Amino acid sequence: MKFLFIFSIFFTFSCTEKMDISSFKKNSPEFVFEEYFNGQISAWGLFHDRFGNLKRTFKVEMIGELDGDTMVLDEKFFYDDGEESRRVWTVKINGDKTYTGTASDVVGEAKGIASGNALNWSYDLILKIKDYNLKVSFDDWMFLQEKGILINRAELSKFGIKLGVVTITFLKE
Image (cartoon, rainbow, N blue to C red; front, side, top):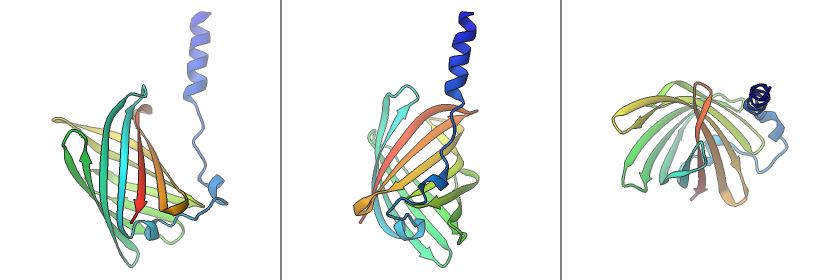
């Protein structure tokens, strides 16, 4: 009986509903990906493991260049342990508040959709951990705030199991 109770609690909490992007349609300021990321942006982030332990902090310097319906976003990461990395996104702006993107460490295409002040961006990424590559899924939620502040919360998972959370605060320069 005790096992059944524990299993039902675990099942209840593991089957949480995903946020619905349309629930943000009335929120402002309106987040337009190609406007926000065009130009120079600075960001600061944290990575917490699934137990809530802070594992890494980092800074990001970004430059976005818009050419028609394509945005190239060059991200440079500077980690607290001295590691540096770079990701260059090529994002296609589909015109209906949807986006698709690629980068060298992204598996297939990233897919994004915006509504109101929010954008949901989902993709699989090859994450390098020391000498090992691990394919993880990202579920990014970005929320534009006043004064050009963008808050991003991304859950990383593998086989549906949450590995950790990345929180990033962007500031458009």
